[in-house]
Image (cartoon, rainbow, N blue to C red; front, side):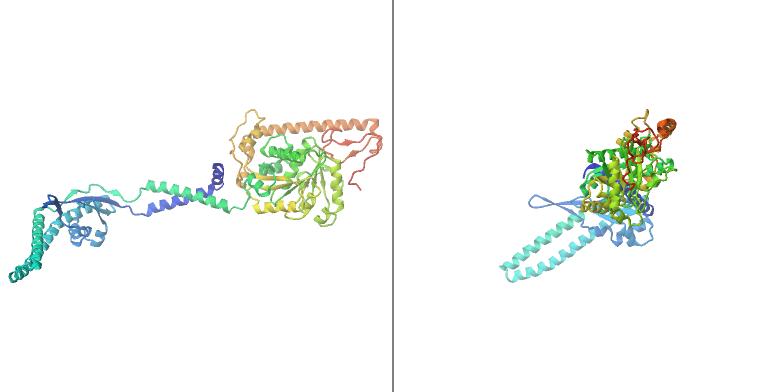
Length: 597
């Protein structure tokens, strides 16, 4: 995984990361609000020592024998409680005391007291330390008394041994036992003398002065919570990505299908909203938008894929019905037409036709459905297939439908067929059999991987020539922003993200014009386009009026003056111009339309 992919995953799951951080930090703040603050103070007691020389020249260091239990013994805690004026439970007070050795030799003892207030912790630690020092005198006296008791026991024992030696002075066992008892007795005498020489067995080496908060500080806990929330959010983002079954990038679509990705269409939803307002296909306007540039990229990719064909038929289908397939097909056909190629778009979706709303017929049009009719886009005609009471799939598989498409192919340069979704019905595969190439439209962030692979497999099983995949729902990149503002004098507005990534409806519903800061320039360009269109219409009207008034145009159409072909008919214009009517020379027989039979 590259750093860019890692960042993209985090960006896609940014709301999970943010939610995890908020939850963890909120939990930490709740813990800080409910926890009882406590403070710890430590006092250090030093155990006094005395030295005892040995016959070998070495010395023994002797201290009063003590253990941590002596610090928390009942008598020490009782003495400390009396000094503090404490009347509560002695066991609870003892539980607040912690005893640790202060060094490896055990000469120092650290007594730590924990309390809710710092001053209280200091007072308890010092009181227990003083009580323990006082208890050390008692412990020393008890140890000396124990030594004296041992000395008395040894005296009694040595008297019995001496009695045995009186009876048998040469008894070796009695002699050895006597020597051992005498040595032990002398050691006890030495130990007792050393202990008695320790006037003060212990003293408070360092009293507790201040208390420190117990546990982590609030700032550190918040910092740990933020980091933990960030890590948890990143983990959730990766889990979400691993469980996500949708297509997320062009590389993934290319890897899943094994076919090229022709284009990534940006701003499709915004372009649809503009069309609903202006009733003009975005690609036919003079305003450069990321969507129009990506449509032109798609047109170029299709032309390159089907290069060398004077007459081509391209089927546009989709993976599922939610994708704006018809809108993409209409703009693709309009792009072909505006590039100077005579184009016909065919409404092959007989179940849910949308072409009439995208490219409506003129108000005075009354021709048959299967006959090409003009559209608002110059050089572009539209054909609506009629199922004639048959099931759409049966009609499209009939010889009549093939004959219509073959006739359209022969009469124009480009035929774009808007077909239903691949997996919804067999219509798309039937129409794909008549075409030179099929374009499959999928949506990044919405189309499931399995749906995309099944759609491609369905087409491949039926030997349909797949030109490539087109992805919608992609955010505009900096490259597309540059393309859409290249002709502007002062391009302004915030730059878009470097990488292309899927966006949800809320993000895509934001108007691209607002983000680019091109509202004023767009209005000016649209006004100029309307003025140019109006001037062209007036010129065409004058030319038609002139031709009608001339003697050569007085004859009936189709005999002397020729007839106007409906194939490729666009807006009214001069003959021979793109988008104009193709006029047959006078004196030649009228050519029958391939679909008028």
